[in-house]
Image 1 (tube, helix red, strand yellow):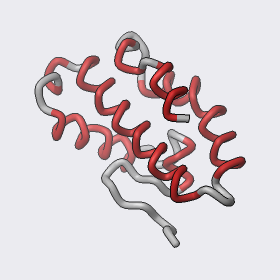
Image 2 (cartoon, rainbow, N blue to C red; image 1 turned 90 degrees about the horizontal axis):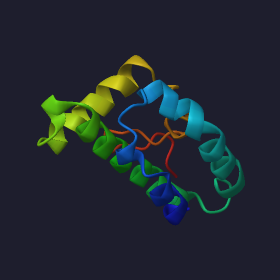
Image 3 (cartoon, one colour; image 1 turned 90 degrees about the vertical axis):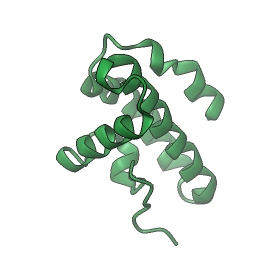
Length: 105
């Protein structure tokens, strides 16, 4: 799964909006959650956090004001999460971009 996420090359898609990225990748993420979420939850959460890390990198490439500030880019992603918590499938699953995991066992 990590190899697949790396192949998406999110940081090379600054022409897309965050809604476009969600629309493109949500079916894949949702499928992984349905398949691996039942028995490999701990491994899945690590992969989903990695997706958030790539989204931070995407934000740094898209917005000049975030380019040299990964903390501000992460804050941008958290703000998007707070405005639209259901935008990405893994956010609905419970993996939040601020580092917390809801419903962890």
